[in-house]
Amino acid sequence: MAGKLSPSVMCADLLKLYSEIEKLDKLGVEYLHIDFMDNKFVPNITFDTNMVKNMKRPMKNIRRDIHIMAFEPQQFFDNMEISEGDMVSVHLEACEDVHAVLKEIKDRGADPCIAISPDTPVESVSEYLDEVYAVLLMTVYPGFAGQPMAPKSMERLSSLRKLIDESGKDVLIEVDGHVSWDHCSEMRSRGADIFVAGSSSVYGKDYELKDAVEKFYSLVE
Image 1: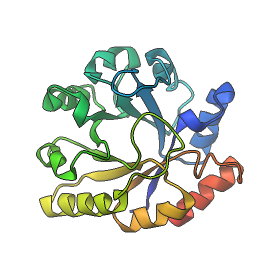
Image 2 (image 1 turned 180 degrees about the vertical axis):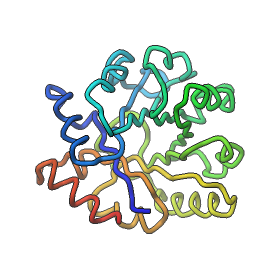
Image 3 (image 1 turned 90 degrees about the vertical axis):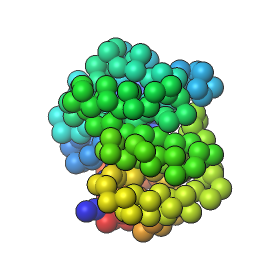
């Protein structure tokens, strides 16, 4: 299976948001990465729940990849209209009852995913592998775009891939944070399946969007 792309919409031209989504849809991109922050779990905010909901309107084939960086994320599910076709990541560190939150995502027809920050041991996801579609491995500290990669991220990726493979579970790995041209091929070789691409690659200044997407796919085959 070739690597899949999930461009980070927070790095796009937000004044042309709907047309940006339509472009990505026509280019065959699998996911649109939407960061939601509560200014509590992380010291930042991005889109409100209404914007997260409305991003679905211009989508035909692309799927919402909603990354919720917020305490007790289930409180936002109704307003976001989490439903079939969505992929939803919640942070292990932000949920009082992780199992219950993952179940609620699944009950809504969406694919539940568990996210972990750079300081959280990869082994902590073991008990959730029966319940998730993917593990989102943060390779920067959550909250802000444009950060350098956190130390030992590549080693953590390899360890997570080994953990999942040895479990026998069919669980994907998504990487999020400084997924640059220089890093994405190594990330692929270490076991990443889905790539959150932002300012260090697809939304950098050196390429038009179409050319950047094509280049990215060529590096994560």
